[in-house]
Image (cartoon, rainbow, N blue to C red):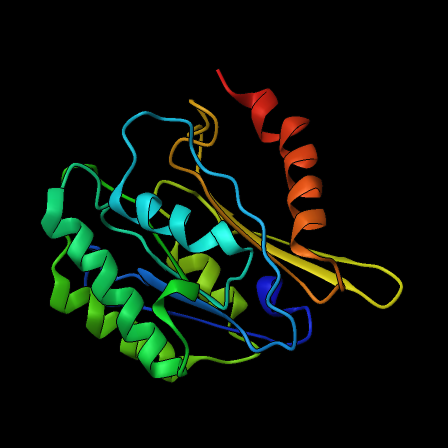
Amino acid sequence: MSVTAPRGFRAAGVAAGLKSTGAEDVALVVNDGPRFDSASVFTANRCKANPVLWSQEVVKDGTVRAVFLNSGGANCYTGPEGFQTTHAVAEQVAGSLGIGPIDVVVCSTGLIGLTNDRDQVLAGATAAYDALSADGGDDAARAIMTTDSVSKQVVVEGAGWTIGGMAKGAGMLAPQLATMLVVLTTDAVVPADELDAALRAATRVSFDRLDS
């Protein structure tokens, strides 16, 4: 279940044709509320992919309601066309969910310099929305894999709260997260500023220590 283990989350993973293997390559994680507090950290690489540039703006207000992810193409070094694809998928996801695109984080991973087919990405977003389920965490975790040999998932349970997570990346940590993707979900009641402090404290003693 991973990211769908906490209450109030749905997810999906589908094949949109972005991977030549035909494997799942589009994932969608949705927070149905009632709270939408969020925190994020991003790569320190000076060359940031279009989805990173978009998502850094999305998270500034500490609110995220959906995360769209695709593998099969990083949408990096793709110029204005690539940014327009990122914007278009955020708008489509938002329209399906009845929310604003400024609350939709977009993440892409895969080959750098490859222009993702916009129609395929948008079709994948529609298919992922249609497949959303409280049991969709496993499919979502598989859809973000690139060179990973297995999907990476975790669930931690406490007294009245749950944290779920999925990640991709094998030796892709430098500089500071590089091409890693990680999505964490929780039903714990924690304000965005406290989530941010906790996340940064955790990454300092985990991912950042592996940076080489």
